[in-house]
Image 1 (cartoon, rainbow, N blue to C red):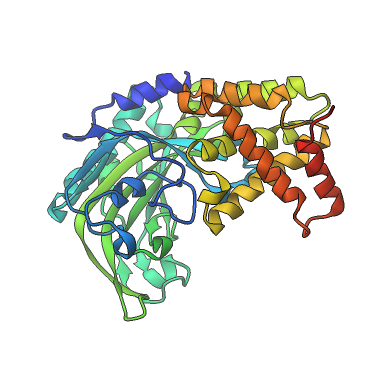
Image 2: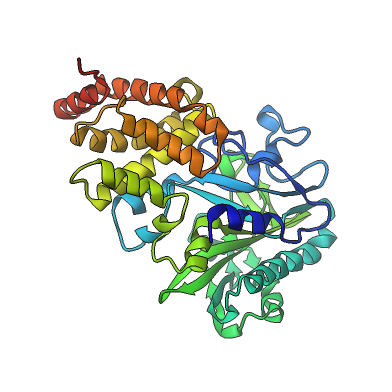
Length: 402
């Protein structure tokens, strides 16, 4: 199955009544002020009425939200796994897509919590069945309950008792066997957030795995927001109480799901990624798989960031820190093979990625992306904290041979 085939199937799954299709959030948005877009929900949340300046928060919202989309994400915490070339590298991408199954459901009335929570579970399980994914291969991690201080490993020290996941029985009713339910007592299944110093609701999270090639591959998630934090005068979280609203969503990692549906052993075999590796390997003599991987995994997010307005002057310090890592890793390998920014290979790579994603904005921004990359590498070449050898390499990358 191809990426856009699956995207279309997901878009046409029966959503919660009233769900509307929205465009994906840009890589740089106010929902994730210290990162590039990380996940599914916060951008739309911060666009709601009253969400301005210091009043921005993720707890209360005016007007219910029901929407569906396929959202690109960049998660810098995954980068360490990619560059260290560890055993889990096969499933990680620096730039990937999340898509909902149920539609995001945010309702004003907390009495609807059970209704939308059940809908999220049943929609996901029904989707698995529709794609002939055997439920015997599906495993669900759930919160076993306990003290907040224990479940958060001391991040929060109050001893509020969290009850076990209230939707456990709904998973069993949906067809997941009890033997496939994985008890968990960590923040993996208790959403205990303080996102960017903004008040954020807490809740239950299910990590959904598929047994694939003898390993458990996490392919989906469900979130139910059920609690909201209580703060002291210093804005420290000292307790939680029942959430004033209801929120649930079921979503999948599109590229990982394609691994399962196509029986791929590596996410890089997915159709929107594999041709990029093939191009790098065929055009750069003697490059090894690890170096080819780093090039692909750096250029893809760099192009997305710049296309969405991520020129250097538009980035805050934290975003610059993340982007700088991509630029340096790219330039180290590009320079090692005596390649230049003006080489046709980079142009062709950027065009191919845009075509694979059917993204006209990316395709029309290739020259401006190359210009921004060149400026960033030149800036690194002037960084006196780097070694002379590294700075020389960076200058060579942007120099024009006459």
